[in-house]
Length: 529
Image (cartoon, rainbow, N blue to C red; front, top):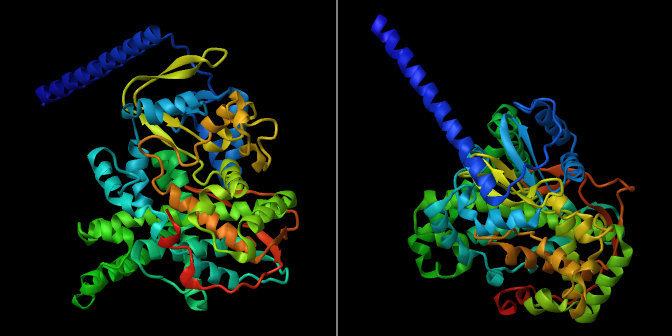
């Protein structure tokens, strides 16, 4: 007994000594790094509890629940500078909106930063394990497999647009476009992923299913944001309604994956599976690796794709309804380039409709669909800026530190985007060649990263942009006059993994034009380069 206790005591002392030695070695290593690179400490967020950061965590929780989290973040950067450190939930974290730091983390030294346990394991309770939560060779494989699916060449939006148009009153009656845009992207996503429309946009019962699926995805993504903010503690915030929402979405995706897999492998359809409308572009890519692989990977991509495009459209039309001058200019461009309701081609969408593209850029700047990015330092490393009184000296980032890269405060920096940084001004993206060579233009373009940068940049960039552009053109062709019908209610965030408008986009639309439209001539492979 005595020997056993002695052994335990010796083991404990040895472990403690080893841990202390390890900590001392780490401190010395960081000091050498600081001396080698001329590092200085970054500003610290004022906080009372410097050990666990409970005061910071409580403030974040309250702001998150009151739908004012992003504005709180912006105020912190206004107060502390473009890079600062704090302790939250017992974790050391660095937050930065300095583009040099962002490029270092996502591009130059990306191998020194990982997703961390928060994103890869805890976040997996919502999104499961797949392309957005994997790293290394597994991620490379999944990225390579999914790449062919992120092409706009197989997208035919026109049937979905016609269904959407039929649900919008043309007499000026108020309508909330947000659920309609989520319907649109849900139907479009099911076509892309599974090659079939999971629900009929005009069928009342199936439309109800669509709304429940969209609400469930929103609820699930609210929990993902809790995970990003509160880490493993977010499990304590997961309610039964969140679990039900995740279960509903998973069931919907499973049913459609199973139907597509059965159809693709059924002898009666073998002669037509070469037609990409039968089993879906993405399912064709992953299906060869078995049902489980295809289903799990599509689950992540479907949930990510459904909400981002819908909310971009929601915010765009909300802003257009409140900025008649911008709407007038956009309408004039569309009428000039596409007279008599001509269906746009890829050439129109990508280059000829310059003002429309500026509007899309501007809405993604003001309301980035993915408001956060984050990484974890895999080893002691250095960021090029953020230290010292002027914030221009390098800083040491200890191994294990969480690094937050919030887009919302970055895109509202007045030193980059001007004094009107918080206003909807598409013209900021329309400049002459001489203006584009100026320092101010270069700073503005360099700091605009709506789809991120580096090897993990969003692969769905082109298909998302063309979907937004096409839907915008077609809706304005049908409804040239749009005004706000919300009663002047100010915008409020609903911040999950995607940024949503809490109160939707309640508008009044008039002036429905009558065109002779052939759905077969819709936006399809013959119209896209």
